Amino acid sequence: MATRKRRSSEHPTKQRRNDIRTVAERAGFSIATVSRTINGVPTVDPKIAKKVWATIKELGYQPNTQARALVSGRSRLFGLIISDITNPFFPELIQGFEDIAVNFGYEILIGSTGHDPKLMERVIDRMLQRNVEGAAVMTFGIEETVLDRLAARGVPLVFIDVAPDEKGMSTLTVDYAKGISQAVQHLAVLGHRRIGFIAGPAGLHSAVLREEAFRSAMTDIGLPPPPEYIVRGDHTLEGGTEAMGSLLRLKSPPTAVMCSNDMTAIGVLHATADAGLKVPEQMSVIGFDDIHIARYMIPPLTTIQMSCRDLAQTAFNALRAYVEEDYKNWHRDYGISTQLSVRRSTSIPNGALSDLPERAAVVGSLSAAAPARTKKREARPKR
Image (cartoon, rainbow, N blue to C red):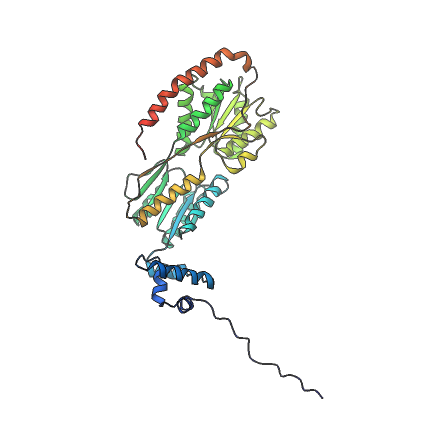
């Protein structure tokens, strides 16, 4: 009778887990040398560092970020605070910021406030608990809670449009006037005289600046907007739809509408369709932000581009310059440009061909005003 094989009671040999000791043994250096390399200590010989990182990659070792923070005293963590995660502009901003941060060995901690002070408090609690080294406050306004609690810990901050004149505070100053002036001139040259504007929330600093830029640009071409042509929105689809309804109910509605952001403009497209109007044949529409979906709307949305990539890159560079470079490349103020992107939601209004002499006069006034505006921009100090 054949004897049965005795089943081994031994467990299969467990594969050794890679750790810093494994890396040190394989690379042929001390644990201390490997640790200094991982933590970016500048005194490590570049050739040694190269070999250590090659070994780390070969072994698939993932350094423990919390342990690194304890050793180096640095979290290599930046906070990113936004106001509305449901607005497509902000996920695009987050993606750009994270891509840049990862390339420089940083992580990001994201907080969305929803314009809710209680949510903001919780976001700040998390950032202080995680010991962020800096925070980009991309809510388009000063948040007093952020200023008081993070600044008290010496955390450098970057704001959009406005920031306190204090140590470690930087501002990304958006040139709203450039893109909005281009948009107004574009509509005027097409023949539009009745141009409306759907503004953003009155309490949002960037929305106020966009509205002021629109009023100024219209005045520059001799077409100051009547009060009823400027309607308050809230930077949402629903707000855009409702505000456009108000404009369409006017006895003499505008033939073109500019919006404080793209979400508002998409709401406007919906409202015009519901009213049986064709864009751009019967209504021209311009947005602001140039979110990714804008080019895929029907028709593709003409909009003012404010690059998420530029905002993310500049905000990250400002924070990194402050925490890593002894302020050598840090500035208090950084400029962000805007630019009109013409697609297919704007065209000549009905009846414009009978208005050619007046259009020629407007084009002439724009041409005459251009050199003065150019000189004014050239006179501004470099940021």
